Image 1 (spheres, rainbow, N blue to C red):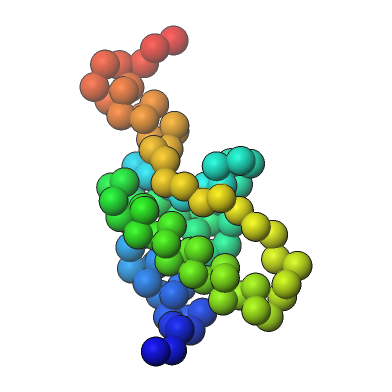
Image 2 (image 1 turned 60 degrees about the horizontal axis):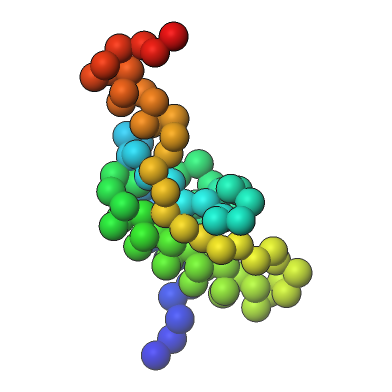
Length: 95
């Protein structure tokens, strides 16, 4: 069985992304959002975890071409900014 191409993996991640999603994929150690999930948001934790797996596969494939590619421990987390926005909508500003 052949591995999906970088293009196919990127398309899979983009298909999972949502403009209004509350979850993001970050490095658990640094908090960075590396390529291919940089700037993407996901509707649910489950969808974000699928994006984690696709991003790990993407970076593993990319590493075959560039062995200096940084390693990240990718995890799905609720974005603090979206949590604050939700709280303000429900409760009101907390200033």
